Length: 404
Image (tube, rainbow, N blue to C red; front, side, top):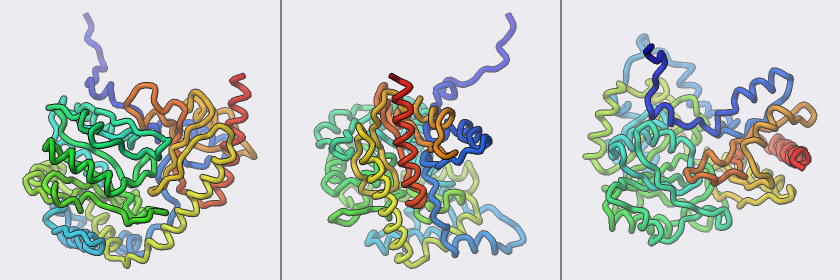
């Protein structure tokens, strides 16, 4: 019998397509037809990258573009520690390993603590790439359901602890959240810390949106402030959103658990080094005055409110105004958001314009969840967002008319 020519790994076959990027080809085809596409599917801000960061890319004058140390350039690690110090969090440069983006930080962290078949608990909906990373490493996701009705906040500790089994290695979450914009309060983090203390698992916090918090009565709380579980805390971070520098691909892992970091360092050595020029540019960002974020935060709040206003006039739409990051998770008055997102790109325009959204089901692990939801990234100027929300409203009307 003739051998099969193309054979792929089971993990490769199971690897999910990204709900954020899977419709990219349809969007490009729409553009070729002369249609303007508002990209609200991806967290790519149109905020101008700070000049000190751009300058380091354009003024690099070394004769040889060398590898950096596998754990990152020491001066960058010092700058990151200084950044945390300004947030009243004590972190030593030796507690930091620089990575190729926040994605590698998450991948290395999971690989360091999990074997195939181990479990991680993740509040859902969650950042879609968590499922991709878990699939790559043959890790089982155990979803912790949250509800749009209470802004996707966590259930009580007892509910979370019931999900812990002998194979559970960590609880993973983002706050401010992607895709929900939810900011977990201190009491919620203390509940997670209690679970960690009782079970001995790790707590992995994706804190890349730390600066972007709106309308809260209290300051943002980092898991690095949970001193009682210090050795069990892992933070993954990135400059992508903080400094509108997604293409620089610089992130980091922060942990006070040196044994954990020793394991991570071996993964870092295997991939040699993170991008050298990107690290130099990132250091310039981390050394900027914190006042840089004040107008940025105000701008995102304005954009958030624009989207909230636009969604509020669409009959049958359900959402909670996000507390941070720059995403809405919205429930739309239709049965299949995936088909609707395709419809917007293939069969609907308003004044030669349309909107690209991320279908909600891809942010869930539980089958059937999120089928009527979309993630909206408010990463464009308010005028464009207002136009996009009007297009979305009219697109829903047109889609509903076809379904009758």
